[in-house]
Length: 304
Image (cartoon, rainbow, N blue to C red; front, side):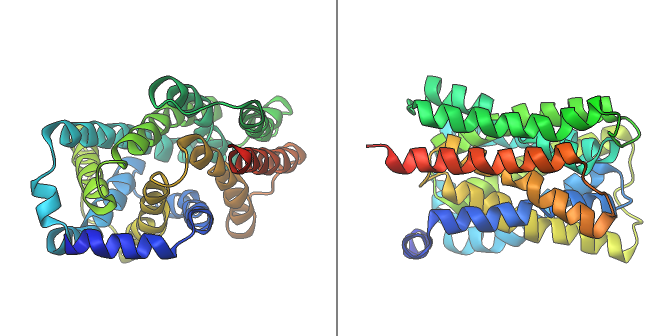
């Protein structure tokens, strides 16, 4: 109970809009950290989630032990299924980053607002107003311009761009499942217990995939472990965990479309840190994405 009281006090002092800005900035670093790592993509995904669980476990045990023990079977199973979806998302997307450009991968994986919007309307009774639909469509269209335009122009990069783009889309579908489930469960389950269960199941699934693939779990250089930790602290704690907090206060369609800012942030970081120069389609699409995010957020604020 003390943990829940602390959570309520913190939540009363944090703006959901500011939290989403922090989350977008944090997740924008993910693709860069993946590219810097030479470990197999699934191994990097596994340690990112495992280290995130390790960072949250002391807080979960000390302040939310009673909540975890009293978690209903249905909610626990739903959180576990959400963890499986998140594991598939990570496994697909981490490999995608290795096979296609940063801009294409992070853009296509954020195509999930279409799936989220349809699922939220069907399952969560969230209204799809015309301005909101327009904003989502505009943002997704901009995301398409960023990647498809470059591919058609013959400027797409990566060893397997088509396969990488396909894996990014699979990651988008799984992220939509993750967002929708989080929106539903976070109405009943406190943040820390929820993400602890989800991340723990996700780590277990990813660990199984690593073992099945025969990839080594150890023997990596010191800088690799620092990259794994960076993925956990940045995109993990300040990214996905903050997103899960925001899902209690902001509609899932707004949260998902706001994350379309990730391709823009990641593209800028790829330019500065990886020397991946964005083409004209990437720049144009990025501007359209930002316009869609603004339109969707404005539509939510004007809803009665």
